[in-house]
Length: 299
Image (spheres, rainbow, N blue to C red):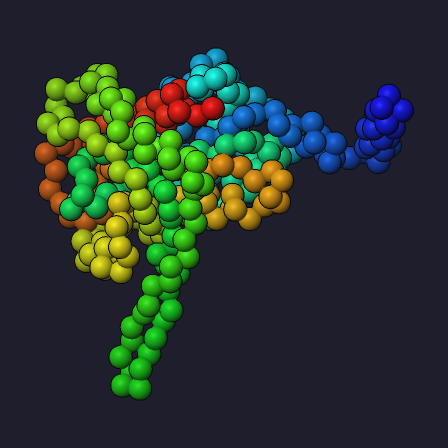
């Protein structure tokens, strides 16, 4: 065994010397050193979501891995059911499927974490949810994946494709227990401005559809609800994360989960709370739902 270890060490030293001789600042060796460094990565899509996630972590600080990597990273810790998890939080590129997919692929390739989480806000199904309600994405799909059809009468139509990505069964079962626990109501009770929140807080597990549009259209929301069964909410990133997390080598494919909270309903609904109040409450319920799930249900 010692002989094999010596060979491995020699290969690593050879890589280092080769990099120095060739004058290259980046190498495969540098990335290998980061594999398994973090238990989890939490991805966000906006500065507000990023700051909300940072607030649930301990010992948060910026960290740099490679000067050629333009992504800004922060690291921190969070207590799971059995141990303290090391967490990496990349500063978000931007909103959208493409940005989420690109960043997910990058962190899996460079760090190979056991978990990929997403936290933030979304549009809810107003027939099922209230502002602040927690939407847990058991499944996600891209509602912009459609078949465009033009008949002989030149009338155009489309059929929605059902390109689903789903979380694993064990995590789904743990989430079911979490949603039935007292933790959900405790999240609301601990909110600083809970006095202005008139509805009870609920968590919904199911289909979170994703698209590239920031929707403010009741008619499109109706079309989506009519096309898919059991839509809980809509966002711009979750499918990108779920798809990318499944398209990797099976030996280091991470568990993945998106937990978002309702800040609006994607249409022209009138709200009792102003935009900032709704956003602040949904950011809080989303990030703290993720924290409580990790604390009590993640091994």
